Length: 107
Image (cartoon, rainbow, N blue to C red):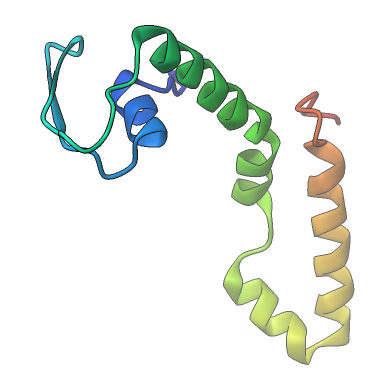
């Protein structure tokens, strides 16, 4: 699986929301917004690093989501005590497998 990498456009949108600009060849920025200041390359680079770190820090959450009980399982557990206990056990196992420090999977 190819890792997700934050790109320059996402960094610019994060730094200057709703600004008007275009980019060619993933590098050449044409700033069209006269009311907002264009970010510097250093600001953009720093924002890419910040956004990537924030994304990477939540890897455990994305992995947990893929293994958590489905909506159907949750719905059934509302009406069946035995299913609810199984659901709580399954959820606890997923949380143990994928800790918040991204050190998982833990068997």
